[in-house]
Length: 628
Image (cartoon, rainbow, N blue to C red; front, side, top):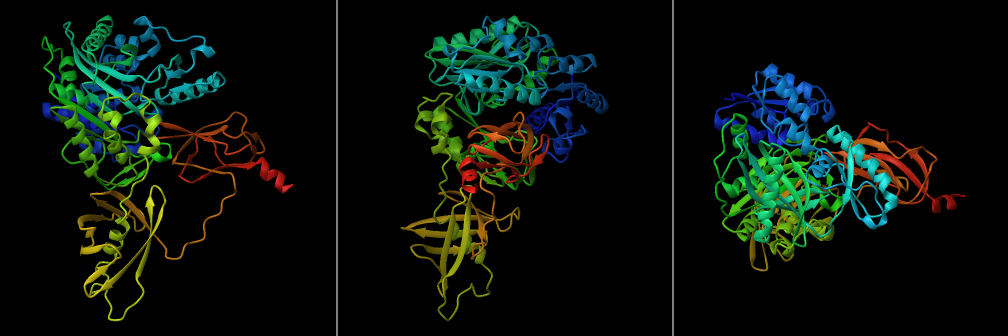
């Protein structure tokens, strides 16, 4: 019997595993980097062991340190979570060689399937070795790991070499393995997967299907179970192929077999030899705890002959700290409040925690379960719409619009959904009276008599900027004997935290919150949406001047690469990638805004930069001619 489990991971998945361990009466051990010293998973564990450093390569990817941590804390088992070392056969062997129980598949099965190239060969699918124009478009993928890291779509043969180099660098950084391969890119397909659970006694369960087609940058955003609209014969085929993949590798524990479904045919993608991020939708539909089953299998207990029956439908949405309108740029800062009512919320953050730059920008997973798909989707969209999220920008509004988009509600989505609709779904739609509500709440209590005067004076004026669109708003209102007044709006009630307005006979309450994270920032919530406002001075300040062609860091992160031979004085062409930034498990290219000369270069490989930091300056050719 397992008595103590170390989770070789962090954040949301570590908290998730700890929850099941507590329910089973099993002690818990966390590992943490210096950046995670005060993280929620550390606070929730019974004991914790430091891994010195901040970068994954120094900490969570150091299997030797994790094994030593387990031994030092007296753990007798290791759960890998997902990501990091979860699909590393060498780490699994090291855990077993140390006399610890490995809560995962056998190392040989990991070795057979963790490399996507070997997995495809094992199941009779060969990657492309020589790419021609006729093969385009193709997909470059990392052989190890997942989460969209080391993945590139190539549509022009001339771009292939550069994309292979970039993918290798990203894969090596994320997984410690720079192997990549190339396969055909099937457009218009759906990403469908099968959850399996296998024991050491010959039983393999196929726990239904999941659809994970809504993806940004090849990373899943919305997942559901069962995958809607699949023909029964295709579902049976998917189950059969998933079970066969488990049997041919002697698999044990939880795993996922992934397919791309197009025109009624299923194309094998890969097998993930670990728990998936989206496992809660399967748990909801089948009424199981997959982590508890993993522990049960690791202890040698046999599964029942058949899995429990499926019931209803479940949908999961991933909340990310990112700005979809700015190329999904990750966001950092203090998460003051997170509350998503009425649904399951798996998260690695609590109120007051800091979102840093070192790891994945996922804040939480919200999961709704209901008897039908329509009911589950409606419930999740409603919960996200009412959620309180105060802190860095998130993709919450995009998620709500995605769940209500006719392609999704009609189950007509595919992996190109966000390529087609990200622009419209990411558009800002702030409540038009949010700035008025914030102004009234801000003024409340400043005067003993509510701010009214006997003599008529000029209306009160406040200026605000909404985030993230940067739009500026002027608000004018009067204080009278009867209370505040504004054109076209009746003010019914005002306090520092709540304002009630009536427009066109409709009354709405506005919640007002401040947390002191930025000077005067105000979070306004109403039935019309959520608005973040920053006060502006009444007299605009002179804008900070930057040289034309300045390249600024779009997010805080680390400079991981510069273009070959990039130095001051170099000639560059418009659109040429110059600098690569990595932040929160995502790589971002900084490209030349125009053809010309690089007149300044401040970026250095390994340097950490803040948002807005000056990285380089490109003087456009037209400017050079004018200066002559």
